[in-house]
Amino acid sequence: MAAGGGGIALGLSALSSVAMVPAVFACAEYVSKKYKNLVEKAVAVQEQEASAFDEIKKACSHWEMVCERVKTKTDLLTYCLERIERYKSMIRDSDKSNRSSEAPASKERNRQIVMGCTHSVSQIQSVVVNVLMHPILDEGLMLAAPKKFVLEEIDPGIIVNEWAI
Image 1 (spheres, one colour):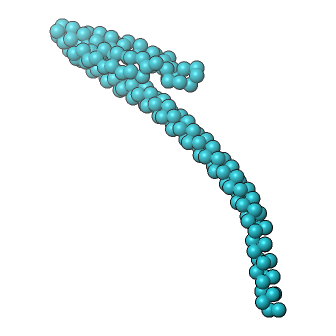
Image 2 (spheres, helix red, strand yellow):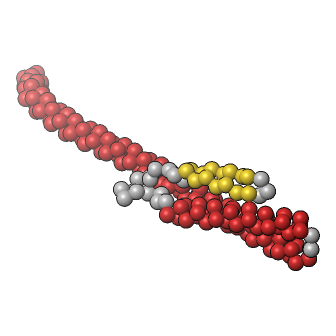
Image 3 (tube, helix red, strand yellow):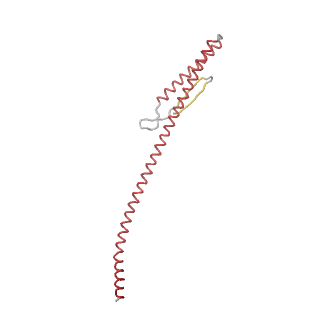
């Protein structure tokens, strides 16, 4: 009887195993499909993140170039302001010298200095107006084509400065 009960138990185990195998395979197939779907979604999200990161890098690069243009404009305008102050000082000194000196050569030299300063100041004014009027960005927020500015000054020789903004 013990042997018969063991055989029945063994037979029942074998039959249960045979019945369970298809269920295990079906469950494994279901889990596999779910895993593939999750992997596909993760890959899609990763691609979206990479695309967004590239867009952010591109935008940062663009705005860094805009900042460089703004800095160049600022540097140019600061330079112009410093030069105007210098010419103002030269004209003031020339005027004082004219009042104190009676020598015609000295007065002629001072007249030339004032004329040179006047020329340089008009050049600077022209550059300042053009710098302020030249846009950094176009209507589509893209960088506008750079514009070259040339500033010719007389102090005491001819000084030529070039900027591209």
